[in-house]
Amino acid sequence: MPERNLKQPDDERSTLLLVDDDDAFRRVLARALERRGYAVSVAASVEAALVKAQAQAPEYAVVDLKMPGESGLRLIDKLMELDPNTRIVMLTGYASIATAIEAIKLGAVHYLAKPCDADEIVAALNKSSEGDAAMAVADSPLSIDRLEWEHIQRILGEHQGNVSATARALKMHRRTLQRKLGKRPSRE
Image (cartoon, rainbow, N blue to C red):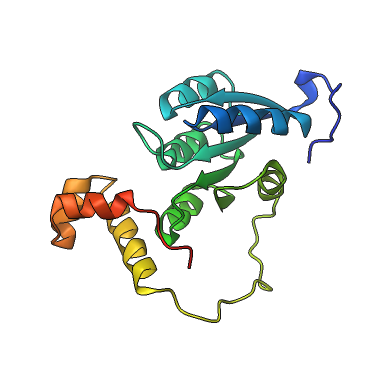
C-alpha cells in the first residue's frame, strides 16, 4: 500500500487510473487518492481511459460501472488485456449481483457500491484475491423487488446492455423495462 507521503516523487508512486463521469466526485476522489500516495490520472469515459491506459498501463484502476457510451465492464476487460496485473475496483451507484459477478470474472479485485470513500477504495485495491470465509451470511432472503432488479440486470448483461433485446427476452415492453432500469434498486 502506498505511504501517505506527499513529497514522494511521481516516478516512485503507484499509478492509478480513476474513471468516472461525475466531475465533482472524480475531482474530490482524485485529490483524496493523491493524498494517500497514488499518482492519479483521470478520465470521464471508457474511450478517454483507454487512451491513457495505452500510453501507460496503470498499476491500479478505479472504474465506474455506468457511464455514457460503453460501460465500465468493457474497460475492465481492456485494462486486463493491457496488463493482467492491474488491480481494479469497480464502483457503482446501481449495485447488482449480476454486475458484481461480471466485474470479478473480468478481473476486478473488488466491487463497491457508491457512496464510498477513499479509505474504502484503498482497502479494496489492496485486499487479497482470496475470499473471506468469515463473512456474515444474511439472515433474510432478498425482497421480490430486489430479486426482480437482479434478474433484469443479469438478462441485460447477457444482451451486452441492449435494452431492446433484453425487453424481448423478458417478454416486457421496452418502455416498461426502461422505467424499471431508471429506478434505483432497493438496498436489501
